[in-house]
Image (spheres, chains in turn brown, purple):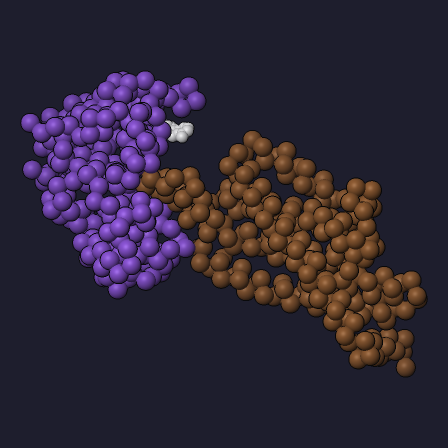
Length: 217
Length: 252
Ligand SMILES: Nc1ncnc2c1ncn2[C@@H]1O[C@H](COP(=O)(O)OP(=O)(O)O)[C@@H](O)[C@H]1O
Ligand SMILES: [Mg+2]
């Protein structure tokens, strides 16, 4: 039997024998990334709306987000430890910081590339700025914003896999343990579940995005 | 003589240091159908957008129903003035009914709640010559002419006293344009609304207007009934315009 065949067999053996443990990790993983997704979604959306309203601030804000985005995940976690300690809180902060960038970018692009005729109509008919935003701009930018959400969700779910390096829960625990006890099957088993979760969420969001893209055309 | 609903009083407006309207004065009586004609870039759109406060004058005053636009609440002002633009600008994510009901919705009009909204939208669609059955469609499912009509219905939903139309029929075929022209004539007669209608088509200007305004490089060079513009064009440019439509029957 090949090495690969053995590995796959071991992985299935792990799922069969420690199913409850993996399910628990999957749930923790889902909770941790879910919280980060909600936080960066909300912060990124608000920040994106804010700079779309004030284009002069946009390059500076986007620049800062870009810089944060390019810090390697592992070193961002390391940098945060002295400030926020070890555990889920640090992981949550790091994941949130990561997720903000795609949200800001897509919200900003979505809101600033709208058909000017439609904005002229919305303003000319007497929308308040808030009404124009809520009733016209955001719904029309929804397709682009959702593409950002999708991007951010997949990234957050996968980056959350290294959160256990700072003592957070989730499937990273099995990855980390697999590495420390020289059990590649355990590392792979956790990674596969992360990939599956990411793909599943991506497919679901893809459908929602398609609906909004079609509606907004 | 009727009262003026819209007055331009020595208005100047520049963009990036380039004058677009120069000492522009005009007084439009209630119920007028004013057609505005002039070369591209002569300031027609700019004049319209001064009326609903989308831009403000550098000097001079614009009065709407006797009140200076500069001191008015722009949101309230605009809700009382219908506005249609060449590319219509229908909201693609809203059905025809929701598009038509937009101004009542943002004004929280109690007249357009629930079942009432459906009825009123259907009435409006009929009055612009559309099947009420289109109410549930999205703009992308309509023809160009239908979109223009929805745009007009949307502009009329809040029963404005003034309607600003910026080259509304510029992008439709000839037959549809004729139909739309007849429709807007009928609406003008039935509703007694004041209309400012920008066009680059002299025949359209003469056919629709009770008054025609000829603009040249930011100035009003002739403001007269269509028959007078035809018979006594005030400038070489006006003469050149009407020469092309010798055999045309103007609105009386
Ligand atoms: N918001 C604006 N910013 C800068 N320039 C403008 C703006 N609006 C209009 N202009 C300029 O003013 C001139 C007159 O424009 P406009 O009133 O739209 O002309 P028309 O409608 O008669 O074709 C054009 O040269 C145009 O480029
Ligand atoms: Mg124009």
